[in-house]
Image (cartoon, rainbow, N blue to C red; front, side):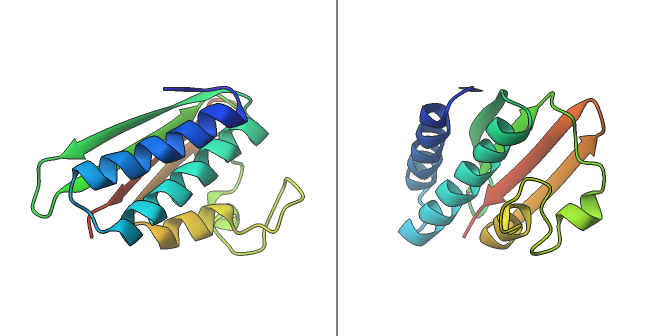
Length: 125
């Protein structure tokens, strides 16, 4: 799904919750995944302008919902710094990426300056 507007980010959040429900995750897990997805999609809009989000249910035990959000924006200069609470280059509270990591069971981030950012999150409980 392409991310190019706040409506797309909102829809991605709904889709994440739907995937969680279809995978049999608890409602609270679906809400956490939806919030994490929304945060990542909002970051795409803020820092890159456009990007993509994909969803899938992994047939594992327990079932796992995976969300991948990526863009071709400016990338993150210092990932370690970006993962610290209250650090922001966008004039916000600086809780987005670290908060997203706390909401999910699996979090992987790759970024290259000038080439974009790729984040994979998963929820399974």
